[in-house]
Length: 358
Image (cartoon, rainbow, N blue to C red; front, side, top):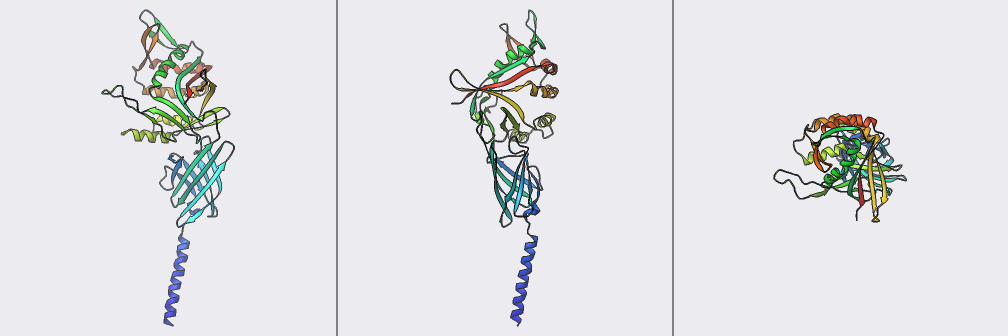
C-alpha cells in the first residue's frame, strides 16, 4: 500500500510538472511584434542574398500559433511592404522555423528563417525578371546637357580679358574632366538579378608618400545600393544604414552624430532615385548604356546645395583648358549660383555612359 502511495505521488508530481511546463512554454503568439535590426527587445537578424542587411524591420504575427503573417518593410527593392500570409510554423523545442515564397510577374521572393523569444532570423532571396540593365557594364564616359546655355555661373580671368562660365560652357567642359577622374575610381557596374547594384571600384588611398598608388580594384558589398525597373525607369534605392556601416568599417574615429545631409537625402530617397536609361548598340556592335538624372530630380536636390557648399573649402577649384590656356575655376561661386540656374533650367541631363563588358 505504501509503495502504491509513493508511486501515485511520483506520477502526480510528473503530471503537474508537465502541465506547468506546457503552460509556461512560449508559443508563436507570444512572439508577435515588429522586429528591427536596431532593436534590443525584438532583434531582427536579416540577410538578403546571404549578406547582412541592416536598417530594416519585419512584422511577425501569429493568430493561432500554427501559422504566421510576415511583413517585410522596405526589404525588396521597389516595395514598401512585402507580405507573406499563412506561413506554416514548424516547432522544434523552443524554436519555430518557417519558409515561404511570394511570386508575381516581376519577381520571386523566397524566405526562410526561425523565431525564438526576442529574436527573428530571416534569410531573403529575390530573383527579378530579366531586364535590359541586367549585366555588367564597363564605364566609358560622362555626358551632360543643360538648357538654357547662357546662365552665368562664375567668371574667370584669362589675363587679357575676363570670361563668363555659363551653364552651357560648364556642360561642355565638365564631362571630360569628370570622366578622367572617374576612370581612376570606377571600373564597371553590375545590375544583378537579385536587385543589387555592385560596382568595381578602386580602394587605393593617395598619400603624401605615395601620391600615385597602384590601383586596388574591389567589388562593393551587397545591399548598399539596389534597383528595380518600372515603366522604363530604373529606380535606385540607397541603404544609408548599410553605407554608413561600411564607412564605419573602413574608417575609424568617424563622428557618430546625425548628419543633416544624410537625413535630407534619406527623406528624398524614400521612393527611390528615378534614373533614366537608354540602351543602344554601338558602331562596334556592342551594347551601349547611358544612365542619367534629369532636371526634375536635380531641382529637388537644390535645397541640399547650401549644405554641400558648407563642406567644401573656400579655395577649392578645378583646372580647365580655355582658348588653349589652363585656368583655375573656383567651385564656390558656381555652387552659390546653382540654385538660380536650376530655377530657370528647362532641360538638363547628367549621366554616365557604359559599354557592355566582354
